[in-house]
Length: 141
Image (cartoon, rainbow, N blue to C red; front, side):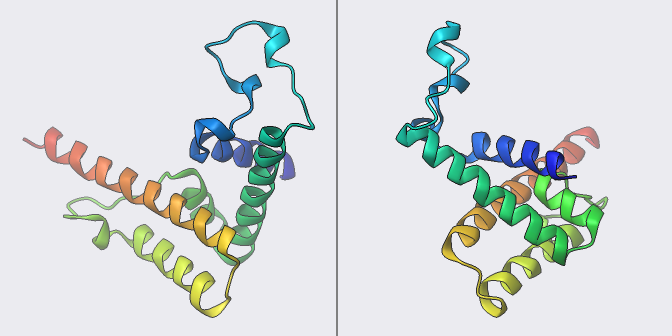
């Protein structure tokens, strides 16, 4: 399980980090192997590793507090979108994710890093729901 969490945390760190915070070893435009070697003591590498740790903490916390399958839908931005809903505000998954975010922010007083990461994930989740709703509208025309 922890290897899955590590993999997903790494993917989330890559997805949500600014380009300037991604180590050069992940730059696929530069194909020279020697330039992609990790300098594990660089500031960029340290920030990136901190990001991975923060994502891992968020994932572990969410898995401990949310039903397993639902938590993984939140983490991987793969919502279960009901047919014929007009917006994300009507999606049960979106409502549940919002409720979880509010719980962590207001009642459990999570730290500012987790709150920021949750906000990024929540926005991505909403975009995915919007995308699915729009795709269904186009398919039904």
